[in-house]
Image (cartoon, rainbow, N blue to C red; front, side):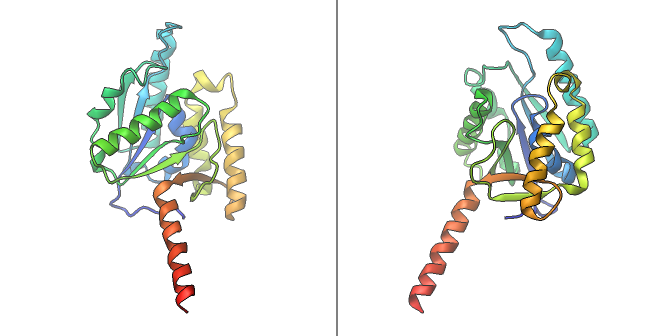
Amino acid sequence: MVFSPSENDRILVVSPHPDDESIGCGGLISLYAKQCDVLLVTDGYDKKLDNKVISEVRKTEFKNAMVLAGVNNSISLHIPEHSIVAFADRFATVNYSMYNYIFVPNKHEIHKDHVDVYNAIKKAIKKTKCKAELIEYEVWTTLREPNVKLDISSVVDKKTELINVYESQTKDLDYVGMILGLNSYRGKSHGCDCAEYFYSEAEYKRQKRKKFKAKIRSFIK
């Protein structure tokens, strides 16, 4: 499925840490900024490291990135890193029902914070009976069976700018090179220069029903 929201659809991108939203969904955000809200779960503060200075830097970087992106709104839960389960009640403060699509890190991510965020969001929207479609994105771990595609060829430069706002992180790792390498690979298999790939369980079920109906029609004939 090619991701193509209507102009009235609202999108929530959930970011475990400052920069995940730009790495995993920078193209999506650049293309649909006015329809996007970004929920930042942690603010880069690690209690064990007591890194308040770097936490303040990362919060500022996040704010600057969101201004550059031009998103509709950004929200922060201010949960310390590695403490998502302990502060899970904060996820209930968000009104998920206003969104048509909610993007979260994929369930197979190797980073525990990312997996905890996925589980917390899934639990929160189930509890509130939210009908938004949950769509998983990739940061540290590639998706096993991506089924949602988005051509981001026209906004690669903007995505690069967004990631580079996070100087505190890019000075140690080439996040741009890593993720754009993946996006380029994804794009080539999609017939474009660059693409972001996602996974939607709802889309998986739609395709499964479609195949089942096709089999039934074939059997009747």
